[in-house]
Amino acid sequence: MTSGIATILNRYEPDRTRLIDILWDVQREFGYISTEAAAGIADWLGLSVEDVLETATFYHFFHTTPSGRQRIYLSNNVIAKMHGYREVYEALQRHTGTRFGGPGSDDFGLFETACIGMSDHEPAMLIDDVVFTDLTPASVGKIVEGLKRGDSPAQIANPADLPRDDVAYVDALTRTTVHTSGPVFFCGETDYSALSHHCLAMTPEDVIATISGSGLRGLGGAGFPTGNKWKFCRAATGDEKYIICNADEGEPGTFKDRVLLTYSPKQVLVGMAIAAHGVGARHGILYLRAEYAYLRDYLARQLVDLREDGVLDDGFDIRIQLGAGAYICGDETALIESCEGKRGTPRLKPPFPVEHGFLGKPTVVNNVETFAAASRIIQEGAGWFAAMGVPGSAGTRLLSVAGDCAAPGVYEVEWGVTLREVLDMVGADNPRAVQISGPSGEMLSVATDADRRLAYDDLSCNGSFMVFNHERDLIDIVGDFMQFFVDESCGICVPCRAGNVMLRQKIGLVAAGRAVRSDLDDMVAWGGIVAHTSRCGLGATSPNPILTTLRKFPDIYAARLRERNGDLLPSFDSEAELTGYAQAVAALAPQESL
Image 1 (cartoon, rainbow, N blue to C red):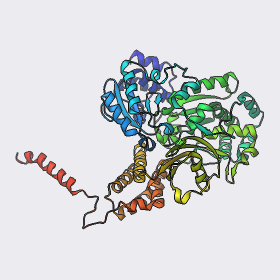
Image 2: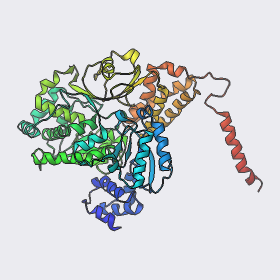
Image 3: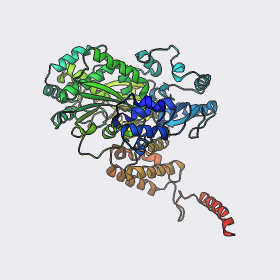
């Protein structure tokens, strides 16, 4: 073991739950995680080398081979491709002399990555833990020139040398506009010490009753009643309990949680402390996605402030756990596995995390927006929150709006608002379709769905709101969404691992004009199998891009179908097959003569 690795290991107790932190430190120090490093880590933690590498190879941002001094990750989501992604992609290759997907060079490695939570400022890229937004070929040239000159990514992005633990630094990188705010979110200064004392003056049962009476439901997508989750955790057997904030905001098109953590971080963190008082927990974890690493120092400063104010102490404290790039870790059980230093593989349920969660202990997992809302409810009361929204969908929620609109950004809206009202609010440009809740959600037709409501019993939106006008090729967008699910499947179950590949191939046939009616029938049948037999929510929702567009936009499929002519399917490329046969004959002919 080298002295450098030993120095890193000595920062930590021999605790498996810190494996991802250790892997990050090793990669930052040496550029990649070598087998030698993995062996040293394994010895320190009492694991096998295979255990360490199993975790390291699961996550997108860990590298086990040299990958360039500067690792550049270009967001390749749908919104980026609508705003100059291809030109930026080519400029990066040209200026670095490196190719995406290639071996890289000593100086540069180029990688595509899924949505990095900057859909309001695409094209965007990460260089290690610094984000660059609103990219153009010209700005890319200047950035790469600076890197070649020896400037660090932070120096290029932050020429004013703003402190990394200051909101001004984060704001300079991201510049997200909050178009509408209040009454629940972004409400200005709050005395969180006083709010904490107010909460502690309540009994745990009263805290939970207040959250239940407000009608707050989880704002990460599933919509489970928050008060019930806290009540079940409090009732679970065990003296040691945990609160986890899911800040792994990986759904493409979503960035509201990033903005909350930027402008209202203490509202979120105090929400975790409120939950801890309610359920009887002493430990909290803020699981921050790797793509938001530039927030880490700033959030650590907020924790220090709360400790100094007495909001956090020996009775309850929070640590930040940085992820490493895996959409599946948005699933609460996969996130728990990741917090334990393992692959982000979803667990089978039951048991549920409120009974058997982090390290087998009762655990509450809620997302950023839910904890922020809980803070305001304890501050203002259950009736105040319940009076907003519509029956079954109380309060407000945040929308991350991007795509073909005049004013992308974050909007706070009351549940019950119609699709039409939101489109008018954001200045939608000749809208044809809206994808709500990201690729896992639903593609809506503006022509037929404009008067539907955002509500749990109608359009249960998780906050992602992507607008597409009549010039966009919806089939290409569906193909992009399906490729995302292929890339992000954890691979543990066959329906999701294999079924999404087959669905992606089918939508590819449609895009190429080589599909027949039976291919559409296959997609419906196979989509149902994937949705109903997959292990977790990723597989359960991954066919949605195809299934919802088939229902809402059947014309875009019908227009590309071909009639079957003879016995061969249009998808059979005879020229390609014969070419392959000729190549095989040429390769085997010399052997036949021996």
